[in-house]
Image 1: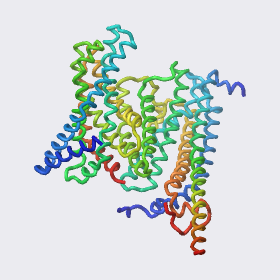
Image 2 (image 1 turned 180 degrees about the horizontal axis):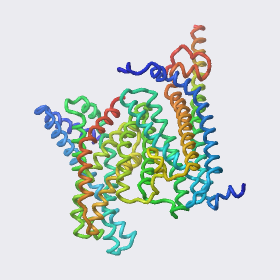
Image 3 (image 1 turned 135 degrees about the vertical axis):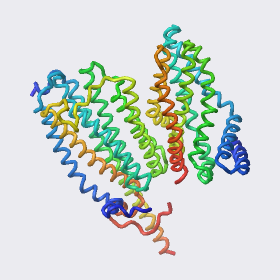
Length: 246
Length: 261
Length: 64
């Protein structure tokens, strides 16, 4: 109930802004502002993925023993997987609230292309739920005894891999938005799409860790990100149409 | 909706009652052919074909493993094509076929993984390895399960079918990417043993090759028979409110008065 | 025959593989048949209920 009221205020902000500038950029900015306002009002929830990541990271040394060399060797891969897992719960609710309160129908009616609005939502989602995870990476790295020279590579890898995963997740989230329940379903659908991303991200991190060149997997990730920025919003728009139309 | 460029018989077949009857007549024949060719193929593979000089008799798993692996990909392609038709033209029959492909495809993928595992143990000494083809096949199984799960998660069956069709199309883009990325990462699987484009390069002898191809034919025929049966059932449940289903089910004309529901 | 069944010592791998193949395909073949029987039974019940309801309303209309 609280969230509906909040999202209505957000919509009013969006309406005011679009009224002033009814062009695509204006709509995107209004949408971003709305999402930030909503995220800020529920800022408690933003800490949950962070808390999850910290707890899981803290569990690894307990489970594997505090041997610093072992931890240093597996740190990169473990942190990568933890980030992917911490992203999952938030992905599910990416479009759910907007479908329930009718905002998505307004998106379909809006003069701006649906794919552009979906891309804006992806950007807002990444900035509010995933970026904090990357910001705390030095802390998590310290917990896992990550070698200092690997940390910058890990962060660059995550900066390329997580937007890619959010773009893919947005398509799946839009597909599952109209379903009764998704939960574990989203993880099942994301796994096949996440495999290549995780492989290349882990390849870059492993390369940095063993002193091998790591530019090639990073370029592959960047290329995939560019492709996904173009294609994923289109697929996402098609999925949203299926979710809204009956 | 402009589908006028389609030949007349496709229109005729696209109508659920017509398809239902047509599939019902065709299905037993396809299954009979499938069983006959499977009998020939298995006799050739299990009895006539000589043991392999390297792998002994263990290689005989090939006669079900490789056809199942081909089927797992063939069915996925069929599902994606039917899904594309369902998304673009909203043909009800295409939606049903796309969704009914998924369980059979998952079944063949599971067979591929299980028989591959049983073959890998004596040959490589391990049940499982993270090689490109095994991993792609596992990812394929997850794709099938995702399609089935997504389709069943919707109240509205037709909307579920369309959403799952889109997922199938996303998956078909993903599958080669998975294959090549895992190949880049790690590889052990034996090379392709059958090369259709250049038979001279095929590393398999003729007494072993023909049962394999006959088994491939049998699994294809089986799939066609199975999908026709599944599509019939799917249509029956999707169209359960329609007159033709009512007449079909109880053999007498349905009540004229509309039910209050 | 026993020699053939032994599969050159690989019997414990070859025959389970064929068993999996047959079992899974048998499931694939019979599952829709069972589902179809359930659908038909439900539909038949629904139609029967509708018919009795219609007959009752007709009788009620005739008596008034």
